[in-house]
Length: 268
Image (cartoon, rainbow, N blue to C red; front, side):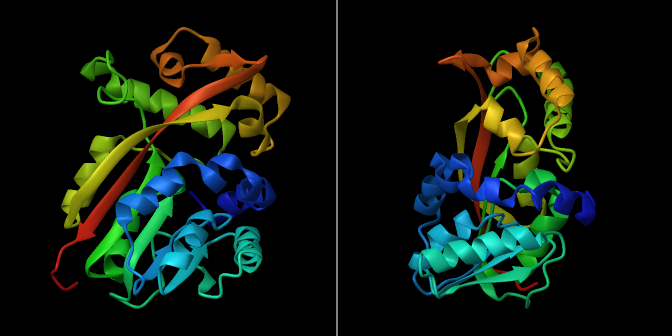
């Protein structure tokens, strides 16, 4: 996905993402910190930081954090958050996730939360993260995942690819900068190929209020109608999303997985 398209989508939405409860205080954020168990001596890089919520929660627990993103508006929100919380050890940097411009083996922890599905090549991101991590360093990722037999019991294995494709088309309709969410199995394979040992993996359900979800991406009335039609239809995708009304407002459920992996001790 081109840098320009991501900037077009997320620049105008930076304030909305700064205020979004799912990104600001979703359950996966606190759980990520618990699973990583950071050391106070660590140097941390948060990739595709967005409005900086992940960087900010780690900052009081480590030596310093670099929050990177390609969108200027998001970095401005991150700096505002750091100032608000008086996080003197949090700095920002413009960086493309698949080609991180940092010194080799200079970080103890690389984090990336709810952003990898925007990357054109997730494996390149993992490889780039490996390059900037010290041997034994930790890569911690949280991202939405597609339907599979693990998170959607009853889905035939023969239909997993079709269900994943339907999910990604649905996400791309709402947000054209969405590239592709992976299955948990695809993530595991990428870690293995790039010499990471998977230390922890947890799946969490994420409740989303439909209206704020579409408003953050400034969806047109026609796009909103198409999205509503999809989630209200009879399909594997609709069953996976579990649409329902709460107090007259539509809701849906997404699945996200937390992965914590350790880089091998071998030099790059």
